[in-house]
Amino acid sequence: MKYLLLIYMAPGAFDGLSEDDRAGFMAEADRHTEEIKASGELVLGAALADVENSKTVRVREGVPATTDGPFAEAKEQLAGYYVVDCEGIERATEIAAKDPAARFWAVEVRPIMDEVGMEM
Image 1 (tube, rainbow, N blue to C red):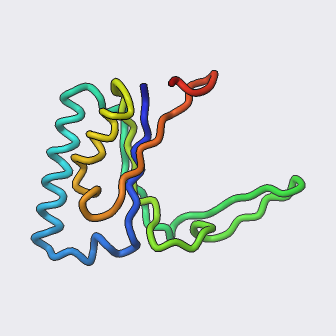
Image 2 (spheres, one colour):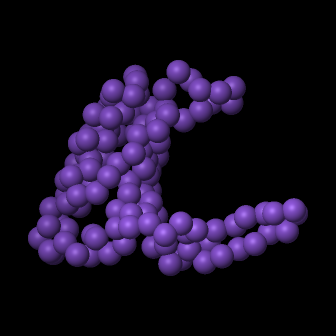
C-alpha cells in the first residue's frame, strides 16, 4: 500500500538552525533515505521550492484565477514529500517517525487512493 508522507515546517525554520545542526540534520536525512531505499519501500520524494515561488490556481465559473503563493495563511507550510510503498499505516508511521524532520517539524502520513478508491 502506498502512503504520502508530507513534511511541514515554518518558513525559514531550516535556515534558523545552526550550521552544525543543519549539517547533522542533512546527514541523518540522507541515512534515513538510504534505509528506506534499501528496504525497497521508497517510491519517490522531493523537497519543494519556497512558497514565494508558488502559485495557487482556482477556476470559478470557467474563469481561472491565479494568485501568488499558497492560499491559506499558515505558520507551517508544505516543505517536501515522499511516497512509500509498505505493509500498512503502522509501518508508514514508523518510517515518518525516523525522519529527522519529525523531531523539528511535522510529518503527515496519508494513504494514497488507487484508481477505484481506497486501497484499505
